[in-house]
Image 1 (cartoon, rainbow, N blue to C red):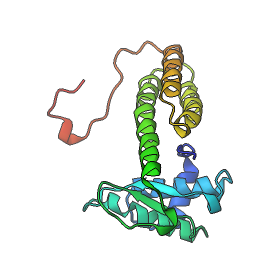
Image 2 (cartoon, one colour):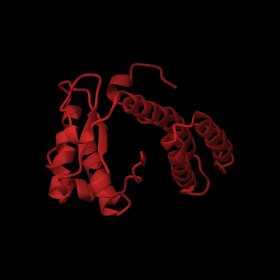
Image 3 (cartoon, rainbow, N blue to C red):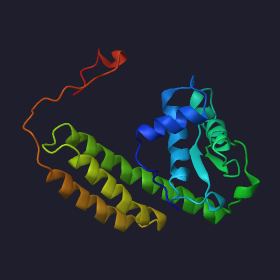
Image 4 (cartoon, helix red, strand yellow):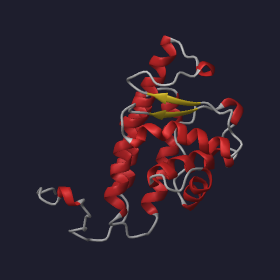
Length: 197
């Protein structure tokens, strides 16, 4: 199990635009492009890999990610890769992706650990990237720790993840920073009336 996709880049956009409708929302283009890019990298074996995507099952266009990803994969010649929707409600079942009760529990545990530990890592990255003295230092560190976390997530090892997160805190704190007390933020208009620091 490799839960972490390669970082988004220009290729993510190109693969997305090539394999899905260009009128679809930009995040959907990026996600579909990332998934096709991952298979094109040769890192993932299409015969032994499934794509798992959370779905709301509601009226939001995010509920269309699974069919969009399937369309992109089919366009790239990867139509046999199962795309599985994870949701609180029943969505389209995939018979080729049968999972027993114990397997579901383990999968949910790994997904939860992945979210719990990648979120603070992203926050550290965002807090340092705006002030880093050496351009790219935060990005390199972020990529290194995402890679380190993969094995711990795969084993569902909480202590391993906690240890790695502690290392990450030390390393992100050690990044040489420019003394910039106020870094401008761009807020959506609907947040303009709130005093958010």
